[in-house]
Length: 189
Figure (cartoon, rainbow, N blue to C red):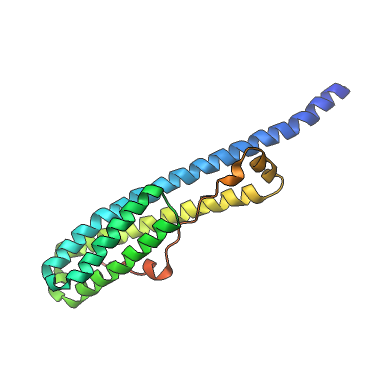
């Protein structure tokens, strides 16, 4: 074997590895952005359903105004926090929103006529479906972040991360408090 071919081959292997590793980082970053937009879509869907649910329940229990006002306030804060994308601040606002919904569902349980209302049942079902989709896209988003951090922090890929300034990109996991995740009732048909 010609020594020049050996030297060129030995020089190409690290170069090819560096290019592949860098491209892996870029692909993961795009997966994170894509899954973050999936969270946005589902949260917007949730935010659109909540006023409808509140209005249906309000028709049966107008005297529960403080509960309704708290939910509307929490929803508006969550919508405002969405502009910053998935973050700890958004997760905290979503947690407060879900805790507020607990009161709405408690009111629903107290009124048998409301429980029998088809609009209420449909909205509950849609909200439960949305919560399932939020959970799925949240798992995808958090998995992408986990993969990003694992690659970024592992040797020798961290050399590429440091060389190209990729260590500065550190998105937060999107996690709700566990009590907020149990708020939405599971609708059985």
